[in-house]
Image (cartoon, rainbow, N blue to C red):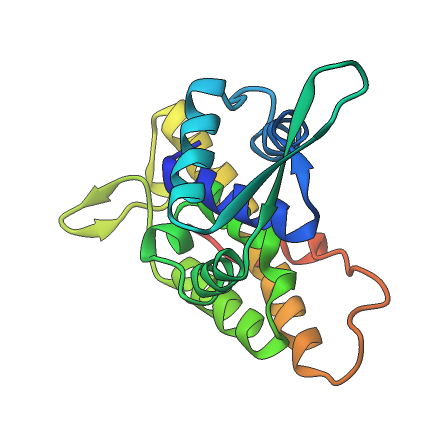
Length: 197
């Protein structure tokens, strides 16, 4: 997990509730997946940097045994920074799937109109012509690739992209409607064959 992504995850989870460092580490590891667990060597220096910047507060409390434990919480300044980062994600946070998912994890903390703005940026990015491979400056489509593995990359990207675009369009439409939010999550899978890379 990149340092910016890690800082966002720390701020986002602490916005939900104060917690001990170990619990925070478990939540972040769950977010990034078992393939990329967060190390103590990355997490605790990141917490310290956020604490020095006045974004995170640390206090001691009695532990189950004699040892005292540290509880981390978000400060008012930390909450403002979280909201700013969610409202104004970098281009990399919009274009990189892992970073966008970290952003998406905490997007519900923002008002609807701000959520829509972020989702539209991601949708615009996904709808721009793109590929893993280019020929003469133009994106190469799956049907133009003979190599089995490159073809597989393009097919998988096309299908995943189709599902994500369908979900984004549905979420944006839902958020534009007044009320508490969607009652059910639509299944966008029937539209998978519509788009081609």
